[in-house]
Length: 490
Ligand code: AHR
Image 1: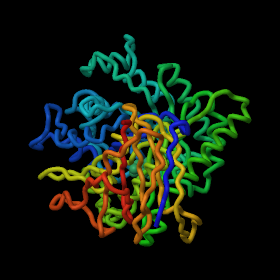
Image 2 (image 1 turned 180 degrees about the horizontal axis):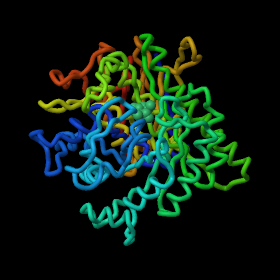
Image 3 (image 1 turned 90 degrees about the vertical axis):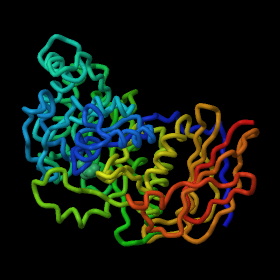
Image 4 (image 1 turned 30 degrees about the vertical axis):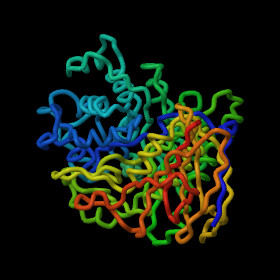
């Protein structure tokens, strides 16, 4: 099979917002307790954070981490996670039917984020709570005044404000599973009033309103319209969430699912612009795809977890090689839509549907770690629109799926990085790359494995890992591979 990718540095999609490579830590399962925080672990630092986990998070160069949920946030009282740890209440978490000890809260997490070299995307509870507690949290985190919540932070040992710029107005409020789920009209009013008082407290913050929890929600479309019509002037971004999976073991269809992500993004951007036109507004609402990943492997085992456990193994999907390819295609889709998607969060970061896994004996990397790391490290700069010519295939629900999907980024150092997945299960692709004059391929990194279902584990952590290909011969995108092609100007 032959394919051609043409790159033109004048054909710019957008400057990529670095926050496209964000992630997510929720109080869920072993993400926090036994994940980022384990005070009795041999690698624990002075605050109980695992240094081995911090080192791996730093390798991903994650610019922003969403916190503390997720479904968890809709029943969370943020004050429970502040102040003297000995006095913090143990509470039922109704979202995941577990016990929350509150030994980690914003006091600790903002310190973890500093140590990990990342910013926080903070979510407020618009389920059991509302505007008042949200504005109090903004004051606690961001204000330098001599008022109650800012003073409370100082009393808790933090003289300087945390300076959290990006905030989510609740989580998945369109979902009946959400604690205190709301109709679109109810959420729109609640979010609008919360947004106003949060921005009145700190005008420098940016706000993300909840969009739909997936493209398949029955309210998808109307939900977005209703929320935008009410909140337009008070918000900056609208969220999208979507998880993908291969429960029917149809790999060609699974590898094509990034086309659904692409359609989802374009539809939501269209709705934002429709409401912009209705309002005769000059303001553009951009998108925050603040939960995306693969989530299906752990669904059955999660049903066995006893209620009110402490930090149980929940949502611990073990990712195989084909999952890594799908994550690669989803990253390519996000880059190719970076004119509208400014923020995206791989959900999640540690243990819970995560690239990084922990055990007492050590950490190990899942297959999906690698495409995410490559995109985060080499996908910064200007997204260019590649013209790809290749064969196509059909699935039960999608026609003309290109075998090759690619994204191109002009990096800040003047080089160009091309990310490409060959979706064919049996044919390599000889690749002709039409580059602007003066660029030379100097690195071709590949993730490849004969067995689509192969996984990494604590015992075999390097079963699947990237390899370097020779660059002094014709470029081939092997069948079912993730490829990172790096060019420099000569
Ligand atoms: O990421 C896991 C869960 O998925 C989140 O808590 C929720 O927002 C979504 O349904």
